[in-house]
Length: 197
Image (cartoon, rainbow, N blue to C red; front, side):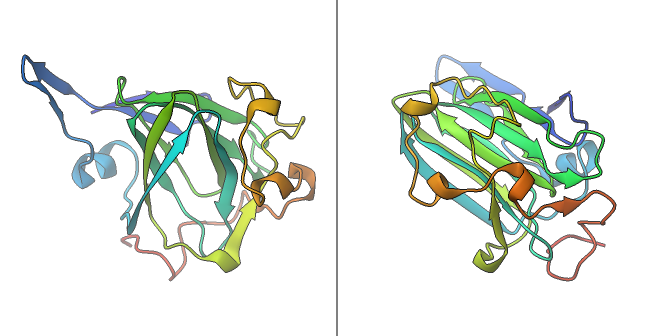
């Protein structure tokens, strides 16, 4: 497993070692031991999968404390632009984002820590998107930001008019109006998490 840094140090790309031959390929998509060693000690407690078609944009989503989530995301089929936005007030990278192409071909994964909003847009005819979470889904703690907030200046790879959104995703507030995280708060120190102490 290779770790590729991004412009925001807490957000990293994971690139597995792929073994291929005339039969196909094999790679280790997740190792708790290697993740703990190379990224940070975390216990993922929930796995999710979604299927979407070209132009579907999901985001920008997060959960607030005490149900904040880290995510490890990957694409099993297709291609997306995946985005993580730092929404920790007081952070030196507040409001900045990382955008990474994830695909079934490059096998890359993106780690999005707590304190970040997350979203993706589908650039292939179809995508199967998978993600691991280190805290359970808690609808009462849901937060979100408008994907097209001009303050974020995200290049999604498609025109905003092409984006296919849920009714819920059409109504998200701008960053300046959304409930956010505090950079000085220890987001990994609460009892509602599966993380090891």
